[in-house]
Amino acid sequence: MNDRDPLAPADDLDPRQRLVVAAIDQIEKHGMGQLTVRRLAAAAGVNIAAVNYYFRSKEALVTAALEGSIRNMLADSEEFLARMADEPLEALSGLLGYYLEGGMRYPNVGRAHLHDAFHADDYSGPFPKLFAPVMERLRDRVQTAVPGLDERAAARRVVAALSAVFFPAFFAGLYAGLNALASPADRLAYARELARQTLAPVAVPEPAAPAPQGKRPKRG
Image 1 (tube, one colour):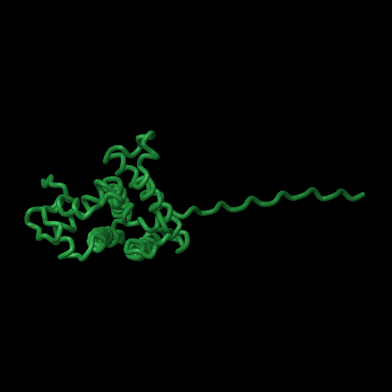
Image 2 (cartoon, one colour):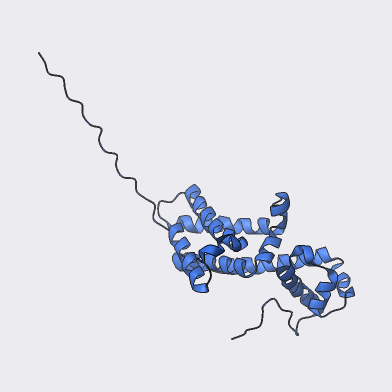
């Protein structure tokens, strides 16, 4: 088993790749506000001038790093979505667990993806744009998997499931006292429970009880 930190720059990467990996690593460790060119270069094991040589600016490097991580996430998401036709519960449990585990392991990277959304209510960045089609495909998979579920109801179930995953991932400290998601086993059980709720059969409304019949007045 490979125990190397996936965010640590590897010796066999070229300087440009090392800078990209180091940017993600430093964002997670220190947050966007503490990111400096000097710190990035030191983490990547390259000269400060390499940042300008390969990316022109720190901002361009951060953009490239975040977009790369988004595309990796989207590729993994597509694998789970492709499996939903044959094994909807297992695939959806895996997808929600993947988002939860990644969000809790790398919360600062997740916040960086939504930095403009958090701070300026701006959803025009790469993550909102690239993730929107994933949510639409997930809605369609859920609708297909649950007989009788219409599109709007499927969309509401997707909103509920993703909100239940991303909120505790970004604000883990809010729920720390409950100790509900502390272990991988807890998180796996939580993701599976969310998947079951999302794929639950449509409730069939009970027939309305007949209105009570009034007594007919007696004739004199």
